[in-house]
Length: 141
Length: 220
Image 1 (cartoon, one colour):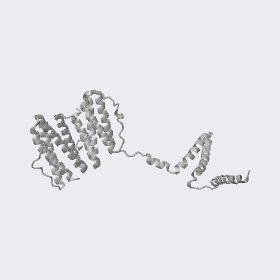
Image 2 (spheres, one colour; image 1 turned 90 degrees about the vertical axis):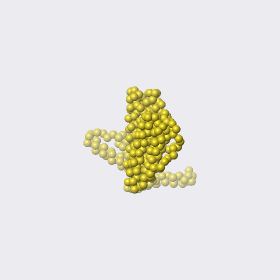
Image 3 (spheres, rainbow over the protein chains, first blue to last red; image 1 turned 30 degrees about the vertical axis):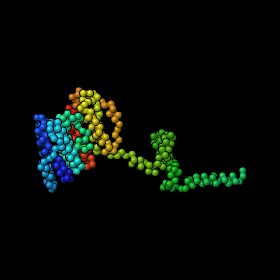
Image 4 (tube, helix red, strand yellow; image 1 turned 135 degrees about the vertical axis):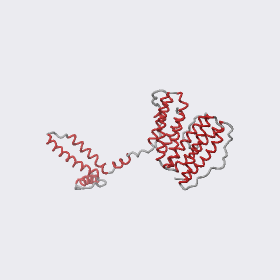
């Protein structure tokens, strides 16, 4: 069991929660509802990680006061693109937590990886990206 | 004949005679020694022939039948042929070499991934309208097969295995439903393997499980 892997995952969840704020502003109504659901899912993962890290006797890393977006979110397309990238990034972090975890922690990491991968696919579909799936979600190529 | 020739021939003849008498008059050694195994086996074969003949004679008296000379000979020849082999450990070695290795725990997942490739190809063949949706999914499963085969160090069978897939029964809707069921099953298998597997396999198996979950988003 590696608290470092979970701390890294927590950092990624903090960033994802932050990003969905500006993303949601640029989306259409239907997509914005998806964004709110996605943000809630990331908050849920964040809370679970904080509890788990505390139980392990580790100090959970706090969220940064602010995050720099990789590019300005000027329109819906940019928002969908960033939403996809956020999910891909969190998927990658959870994937790399898998070998570092076991039992219930690995189970949570796999569920998180799967959820992120599914959301990334949904965002690609909304953005009209084809194909909407990747062979190995979370694998950094 | 000049005496020279005689003296040259005699040791050869004498040697061969000596050799034969050595194996014949060596008494009855109880343990086969290296180099004498064949001679001994012939001797043991002879004993066996006598034993079999005796046994059959007894039996024939009991059942009032003539013993088959051919059968007796076959048994004796078989015994003689087998005896030297049984002594040199050939059978033991072969058993160890031929014992198949224990199947890898990922073998069922590999089989499922291969089946999914065929199933998607069959669906694409039967319903070209689904090609755009299913082609990347089939390709993903092909990559899963290759990655799994690499991990469990088994040969990735040629694509000819899935060259002529059985056309799916029913319409496009039921075909998609069957594909979704198969994807869900594969996701479950991969997730269980990820959960139970060693750390070095966890990431790959997690990705495969997640990939199957994403396929449910497009296979519809």
